[in-house]
Length: 262
Image (cartoon, rainbow, N blue to C red; front, side, top):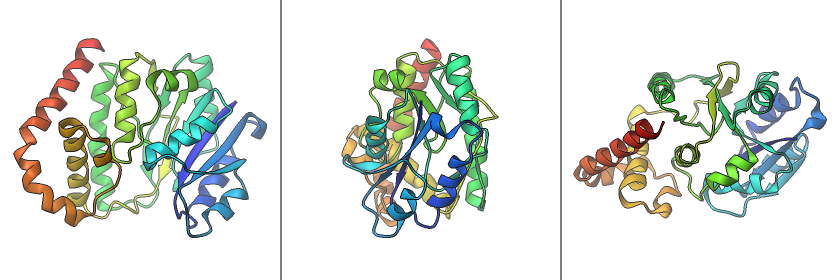
């Protein structure tokens, strides 16, 4: 069985479109389950989710990573599929995943993430993500939370998602790489997601610079738990600049490991 896991928090405006696209997949509905992990919504997210999803569970662990982990723990399937509540899925999406992880023999699969309501910022982000393909030459696949699937045994072997919200997909990608999971990027496995949060390229860049700083320099999971507001990031900017060399050194070391062992 395939288990599709969707974290959600106050997503009444988007979740039905997401779930309806999943309910209309080309494989038989009995072969997959849909699990929505609700993070304590105050709107009608849970009500809407129950119309389509097989189960709506309450989030217990912290962060987006924790929500995905809660869904994985509750899943009955041996293939775990991760996406977001503001994402749409073409009819053959799960069929492609099933083919890649069963017939294809891969442990992990992912595909393009495109935006159905693009902004200027989203165009730049999509262009920036093209460099991810360079890492494929060394066996490293940077997974994006709205569009990837993994065999449950490989997920458990890598330790699953940590209780963080920033770079939770990057963190899992590194740990899957370290366990030598067999990955593939397939262009047929496309997902369409929202660019509603991509309003400012500066804010987006500072958000992830802040994330890399905490991930590679101080290593504190609690610093990766909550998305900081742009003004908070700006106040930390001078501190980030002072540690930039250290950040770059650690990122470079991670890449060297990818190249050496890829």
